[in-house]
Amino acid sequence: MQLPVLAGLCGSGTLVCIDVLFQRLIVQNSSALTLSVVSSIKELLTVFAGIAVFGDEVTTIQFVGMFVAAFGVKLYGSQRRREHAQAKKEYVPRLSACWHNHHASLVVARLALLSSAHPGMAKAAVSDHIVLGHVVLQI
Image (tube, rainbow, N blue to C red):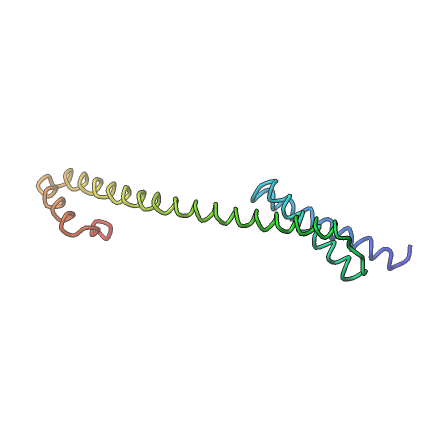
């Protein structure tokens, strides 16, 4: 075998291996639909590279097909961003509620600890909490 042919085979094999690795990462961290969209982008880039490098000609119907594919990718990306933003908005109040619940749990735990060690101090601890707010977290 000639050296350029061997180098071409090794280069192609390496690129295919990298492609399969990225596909696995995409499916592992996202979904099969996302992989399909990314594959569409890859195909569009391949067509554009063929046009730029080899001077391939594109018919009107092929150009319309590429436009529809690119527009679909754009719509998918927009929808994913909207869903992500909505999920983020819903997550923040839940996190806040968890924080308040955690804070209340700390207050109850502190009162239980004080009342078991010094029965007379539990009442003082309640008044400290009411007056000072989140001081319980700092003690």
